[in-house]
Length: 347
Image 1 (cartoon, rainbow, N blue to C red):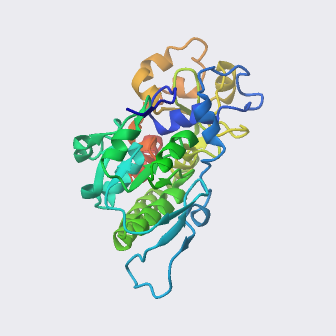
Image 2 (cartoon, rainbow, N blue to C red):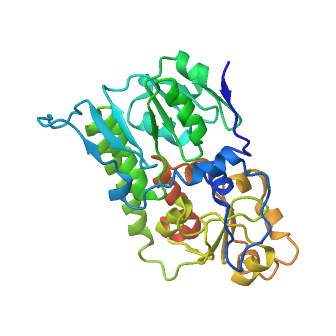
């Protein structure tokens, strides 16, 4: 049985990207010593899985024969995925395996649950996804199982290594990488996957609903007097988000002012002094922090008592699956953050 095993810590989009991207320093606000558990396979993935930064660049460039009927996809179809790879589809994919929770959620949002033959072990939404064949997780991906399911499309994410993708393609499988770096990229991915799977009309509906949720949040927070300074903690070792990350885009759309503005990678690690000096007015716990820390623990940290967020007891746990998965529920993640920052505006 052929299995692929990257050495990774935990399956959460932001946490995994931390491990992939923490190859550079983060200016004078970060620790100079980073953890040594970054897998080589994940590190080599980073260079090839950078998502597009606008809807235009993250939406696929497509080529199809002339004479296409409006509202239907014409095959063969060639698209460009988020790793800037050209991917050709000879026919409509009918058996799809998803290697990340975000892509699984996108498939179900497009009403493609009946075409899903396998998912990663962390795909837990919607409930139906839990009943699908498990093809692996962050520790291993069972290539033989993916092949045995007669899969004709594998949806990969930014954490998926080049080695695994090459192994899947060597077995004759088509791999599409969806790795949006911002909310515009999610919108583009919705439309891209809808086109690839021949449900463009449904894609337009899902995209419109996604955009409406974002617009509703923007309208709600328009009356905010000032944007609070926010420290977004990913885990107890003070990894956080920075401009260029998917979660930072969510925070900005939710009306938060990130205390990190000068990092050289999207998921830097701060030190205690940097957090204290930035004096965040709100501390948000996402991803691993949502499971391993509590507001009470954060507020009891030595030396943090003079931080505004601590003094005013503004330390909150976010709903991790909404704020860490770059999929169709990310708009709800923006709403979750905005409601936390501006509770009075959502009454």
